[in-house]
Image (cartoon, rainbow, N blue to C red; front, side):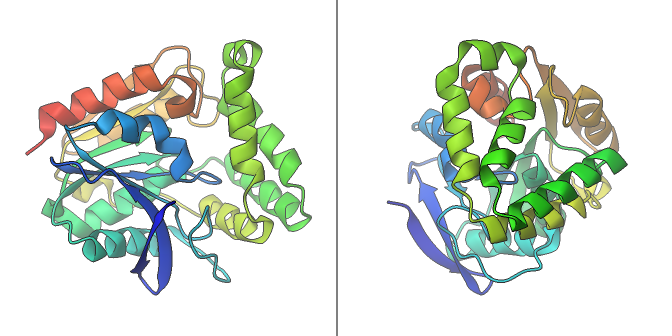
Length: 264
């Protein structure tokens, strides 16, 4: 059962490995939850204290009436860190969770010792914004199964969809389990999101995506790294947008290798 904590005026559900070592907080993307990070929490072992949480409107966290925003989700993340008494942490974000991580890191300054951003973009293209707006409309119509099918198709590579029915099933279940009204609010907030604090971040930043990612291709990861003071860009070969589910071994090698090099 997930733990619960009051943060920024709501209750957030979270998992905490409680292990010794530097803290690492995992921030999921649109429609995700702590369950998206199972392999990463397990991989923390005794090296890091791994914390994953359900963002406002997701999973077992509260789902207050919207609107939501990147700034609000960032304040929730900061409230989580403060509530847990965590002075310094690394933040690992996925998709729109990257925007949340960047917003929080720009505010937290030296309290963030590293950022790892998977499938991020400085801002959504017009086509991307339109797709997210359409998802919000589908959610308001209660069509979460249709959204789950679309997200699975774009989120996993063709090879994964052909060979790994278990991963497809897990991802569909993850998306379809979302509260439709809250998902609509989250999709609307995601469409309006951007990264406005990249140049202010002094910590090392790893920005990466899957080579087959149609949502945020490798050029987006490179664009993020180029705007950071200490940015580096990488690619996970053969994977699409949800790298942590499709190829957790490669994801963990890249991210934890980076974190081990940068840990205080």
